[in-house]
Amino acid sequence: MEILNHAEEKMKKAVAVLEEDLKTIRTGIAHASLLDHVQFEYYGSPTPINQVASVKVVEGRQLVIKPYDRGTLKDIERAIQTSDTGLVPQSDGEVIRLNVPALTEERRKELAKSAHKMGEEAKIAIRNIRRDANDAVKKDKELTEDLKKDAQEKIQKLTDKIGKSIDSAVDTKAKEIMKV
Image 1 (cartoon, rainbow, N blue to C red):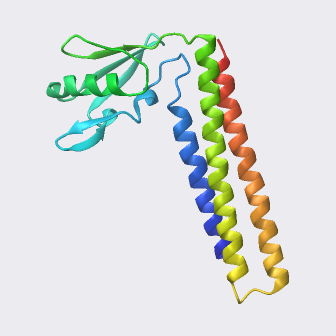
Image 2 (cartoon, one colour; image 1 turned 120 degrees about the vertical axis):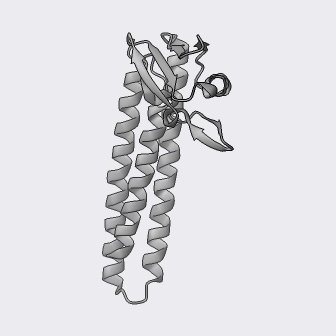
């Protein structure tokens, strides 16, 4: 059924967006995806740092950013300072170093709450998709009452399944954050 396939596709996209958002939450361990959402003006358009520089993890707690064009070093440094990563860039004129400090217990709890909030937002998106799919089924004049009821049950099962995958992703991230 086209309505069900369309709803499933949208729900999977919502989960993918959640997973990308969860990657940007700092866990006290350095990884290149911490900077995925940090952008700066490059020739007049907002550009992610990882498109104009190599980002490497060094010694587990440090990121080293080496721009392909040394002229962008200051812009990248400024973008990191003004971002919400909480990291302080240190430049030596060639590369930018970011030390990822260990998280305090209080900060870990804040980040875990943030992950749960992202999960709730994803669930809201899923419920909105479910509502739209159910409305589409109700408006479809070609379907019999039994087929409509069957379609709505399938949509609900899909919603429940996707909801569980959201809970699983959020719980995994929360455990990762809370691990010392």
